[in-house]
Length: 155
Image (cartoon, rainbow, N blue to C red):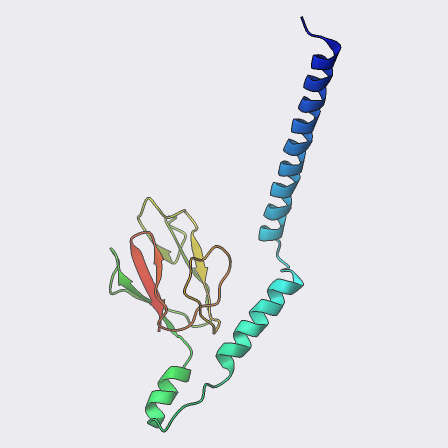
């Protein structure tokens, strides 16, 4: 038999679990809205601006040949696939957005079970980072990016 104390403990325990579930649901919805929002937060925009300034500011160059410094300051104009089934192929950036994924509507179609139908989007912007991309990231030239079995870089 259930005593009043046992019944009260079960009732309040269930209530606590219900509130934890509601809090987790609201947190998940907030993260989805924040991720898919077309307008980024101020902190995110500030980080992007700082990354752009760091890349655009000229690095001190020792007495190097003019052709070498011109090559390092050049902005990427080509997406080159360097490894995988499509190795050797390239797509010009030319101000257009390049999409990568399994769907036939993408610019670069990757037939790979580890790639989603619309996996990534690449467009011109001048910064770099060497880490797993979980959010929009600014990439520089010669930074290899791997999606499934395919590796590409901007040149």
